[in-house]
View 1 (cartoon, rainbow, N blue to C red):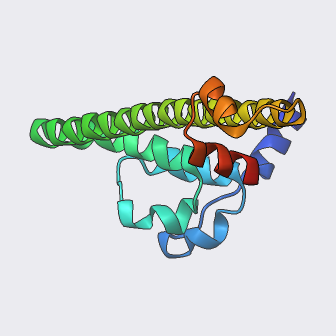
View 2: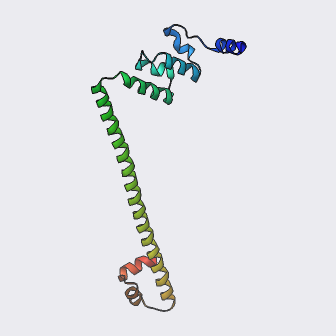
View 3: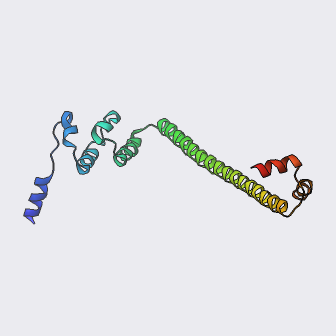
Length: 153
């Protein structure tokens, strides 16, 4: 048991003076140790220097820092957080509405193209059977000009 304790104590990294902490924070464990050791002295401008872009440490720091805020600061923060949630919700809702509208528009365009292709096939078949253009136009419910455009395309 003594050996285990001795090994554990010797494996701990002792942090040097504050000026050189950045050099000592190499692993996540080092960063967490520093984080837990210095929560009484928050310095938000040092977050990037000490923690890098670690989102977990940054979020934990932000949450702990809230305990030192005044009630007015907390109200302001909560108001901004609510606005952000509303903004995100609006974006998601807008995306859903736009996606649905685009989907419906795509379906309508596809149906239109399908009907046009069907009319072309029917018109060509009727021409091969000897029907004249005015009769085909009447049956397909298109004008003679539209029939001519269909048969060209």
